[in-house]
Image (cartoon, rainbow over all chains, first blue to last red; front, side, top):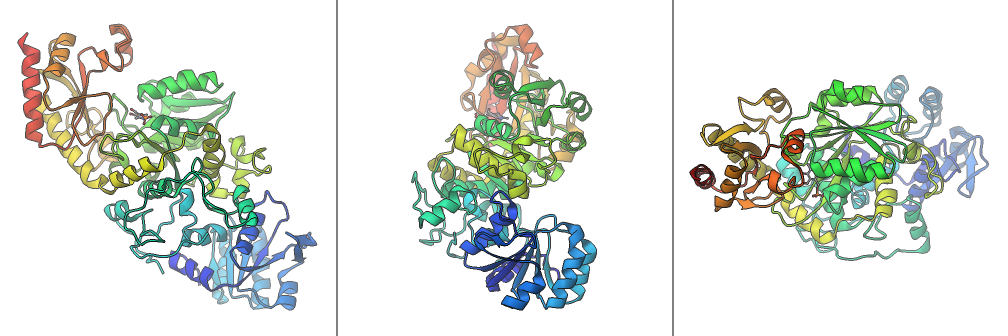
Length: 160
Length: 430
Ligand SMILES: Cc1ncc(COP(=O)(O)O)c(C=O)c1O
């Protein structure tokens, strides 16, 4: 299923406890590092996947999804920071590993690969940032003047 | 979970950015007059200061009441987010300094607010940012003025005081073809009458002092960005090159579509310091709630005033883009289908002295320099905002000595025409 609604994304973020960041960087200036740190700060168990690094943010980096799944089990969400060309191979690996949910960051768009993941029964979010979406529903995004798109007269707590 | 419904403009004007207060359940946001906000821990403070977490640190950079106004207006303009500023002039300054630096160049239409011309032509020029002003501001003429170091195009949806309507779609195409963002000052139109982002604009600015506030109580500004412009293509090194003030982050890389707004707030607002007071933000939230109903009434009254003046022998050259006789008619129909705003200009028959007698005779219209108030306002540019200019210079600025600018308010329109009638009578009398 390709998730295209705010409520669908909020549901994924609510239910997930473990996240694999594929293409994680240890460079504090990179987007993947920002997202990895943010997800950790917000209570997710985060695993880095990058064959070129030993460690990311002080923790072990796994060479690929297969190695990660073997050692830590299937993560609830696989968050992808890779070039669109790398997506078909990654999707095959995710299917083989039994991954249920693929989250593709901004610009990680490859229509054929998304189609393939969808028809193999995976839940897919495309061209969205996990950090931004988490902050949107927790209303932390609103604290910086960004539009959360939330229209509601129900009181809910702010998560920062 | 939140509904996936797409709500209408009026609903969003009331609810966007202002859900019930999380702590108290208050339906109106509290005025959070606090300079600082406590950190949970050293670890959280570090994340905030390196922009890896969202949250409040210090009111110069962000504040919950200011954010309520920002989110509301960003939502109404269809933008990704907004940064509120101390005034409209500050919004322009923050927008421009977020994408341009010394040695850079801008292309602006000549049909813009005189204060903006001065800001660009004098203050920003002194900082090394040069502007070419393009007479008429058509897409082709604006495109012809682009240089290799040009960083943006700048226009007003409805020009002040010329009330010319910008061809936003054509301008966005011309700007994008040159790799540039289109900046649109939407003060006169407001997002109720026109949403420039829907026509391809990248950055929208407001003097919120005017219709967004709506009651003539505060001076304020805001800038909104679409999130659709590609800032990482090398044309805007301030956004795509490592920033020495944030661990050498490349904003376009680390924040993707949020790059421009993140830099505008975290670097430019931080350093310029022209932040909006939470008190003023609260007044703006109150104002924006009723924007749709006020703008409907403004355009209804403005159209009737324009038609009244057109039929009056004491007035000539009535300018209102909504009039059937207006050369701006087609552009107004395309970009302002719900009405062409609340500003009408005309010339008093009998020249400068007649115009002066007209103003002095008015009872109901307030003689002031601002516009966009709920009350009706009148200005004689030649003896006030442009009084330093001689008749020749006034002509070059498109202002004649007998020209009057009306900001049509929400009074009973019969009372407004009654006052204009007696004013024009006094103008003729001498
Ligand atoms: C179109 C326009 N833009 C900007 C400004 C400047 O705004 P402020 O007076 O809020 O600084 C004005 C003020 O008259 C204006 O009319």
